[in-house]
Image (cartoon, rainbow over all chains, first blue to last red; front, side, top):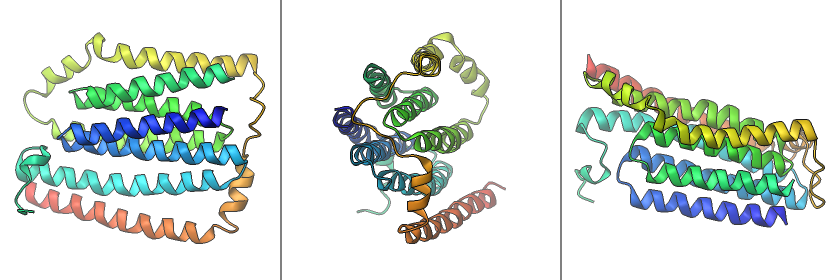
Length: 99
Length: 167
């Protein structure tokens, strides 16, 4: 019962992170929203691992933690570069690639 | 035990809502840290104490400190002192503090009353996780190290170029 509700909570958190990612245009907030979504995914893994009483969920959590650490260190370097080159953190202002 | 889970879940959702709706980056970060700590309480209640400790040490301790440093770096200038004064106004930290107090109350209750875990949860101890991690999952450890090395090099590259341009 607890694990089912934990999965529902993970879904809610993931949706909140997705809404934040789509709603905000500041790069810092977009990164924070990605962190929220990663956390929701790890909560789902932990809940599944607790439900089946297996260690695999926590191992996946460790891998997500590693991924988040690597991603954040590179992404924050990119944020510093953007702020020093463009003097803004608006994601819509970075349209030089004409994609 | 169940009611503790629901309180922590409510704290998580409230703090996350404050993160995505707040206009100030530092306030959003404060709320996100509270959300992460609440998530750590949930991990503990789900029978994963090792994951709960890692959530606080790595996520709330290391990754969020990186975020705070970058936000502080981006706010250089003569307006900084005035800005800091506004950040320290009581209205700002009182919301996250209340949410964190709720979590502190939960932890005290767990330590003092020592409630029984819910029936369908046995809990996965750190020993089992470690045995599985360095047994069948040892290739995943190698993959994680291969992921962390490019992360290190990438962060170093970005920061080094920035220092050169500023000089």
